[in-house]
Image (cartoon, rainbow, N blue to C red; front, side):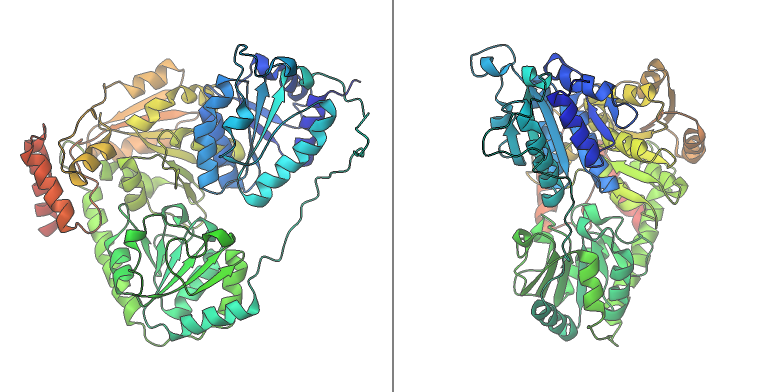
Length: 583
């Protein structure tokens, strides 16, 4: 049997335990597709409807499994379509390999059709980025690309000229090359900080009286250690968005999220603390952290470049979050004063009462919080939830509690719209027996809604809950609250998403009455196969921050004065919401 360069590429991926590739066939990757066809028993190719979705899926596959995610696209426009999802992976620290086609090697840079220098395009997004220079080049670069993506938790890219893909590997290497000089051996470090740094960190934690633990995506596999340390330090655990599942939301030690989508107790804990321990997070909205000089800081991160990035910490502990927390637990003293934690716990009791109140309102138009609250109660203990970017992110963050054993994610640092559905598809492919749900807005969903056909094609029982308000809600409120401008160009052309689901050969439900919301969600979750639930909600319900500043209130008022087109309805909704919270 002839061994082509594409055969070597795919065999190398299999050696690195890659079992799934997301992409679209194209003439620029026909050689690779043939190698995949011949190895269907070892590696799956998932055909998507847009390459951007393939990259999102590869990112999510890495997020939910910890494995290398792989996406494949043809030359020119196919490769360019991958960019957004690849930046999502880069910015959230996920291991993804992108493979793209390239023109015939002797026509590159000659203004030929689809002649795009993708290796140059990918220079910023990829930690390893190369062009295959011949059939005997592929083994080495494929090994290096896989190793780089996994080791640096980032994106690697290989662009592969069409003619080299089907050429036979000659094994006639250049004079300084040796056959099979690379390998797929994985190297693991101890990933522990130095003893001196540990002792300095423990000294700071022992001296603190009001300590806050901020946990992010790097702490997702350290749930037990986080709660044990919180108990020992009598410290509340605040969670960055990507750390939502690091600690269950009903844990007595957490105050939930932080930032615009966070909770009031989390914000108050940050404002009052004298010590901050950051665990596996580079939470970007530093205005929600303690003011520099207010609190002493310790940070745990596996990436030394992240130490001191958001807050001027005194000690940086470079290492794996779980193992580093275990080391700290053996050294730190147990605190007797529980007053700081008890204040946060009392605040959370009030917060959950408020969330329940907002999530059980029966007025119409239906509030989006009702949909999130009813869905959260019905999710299985092992559910995998993918949110999108927009106002739906606020309702997911606040009204859908993370349970022990669940996984939750979103496009964190990039905050890209359209991620929710591809994320849920990747989760369902990785875990076919688990409940996988996409909680999305109509704006984000409609960007890549053709991927619902991917669910139908592969009979993936993904459940998509669409918060339908016919507007780009997050942008609308940002225009008003941040800039004091009336909303502009935010309204969306309505469509019937339940009918769209049926047109695709699947099931669709519509909810517009809070009285029937729970029952319809029960039906949807129990329906075999892919399902869309469109929830028609109040477009004037604001995703207010946990604590409104005077400047935000002033900008909001200014937008109304300057001619906000829906000002009467918005004023009525805002006043009505506040009155209902007070009675």
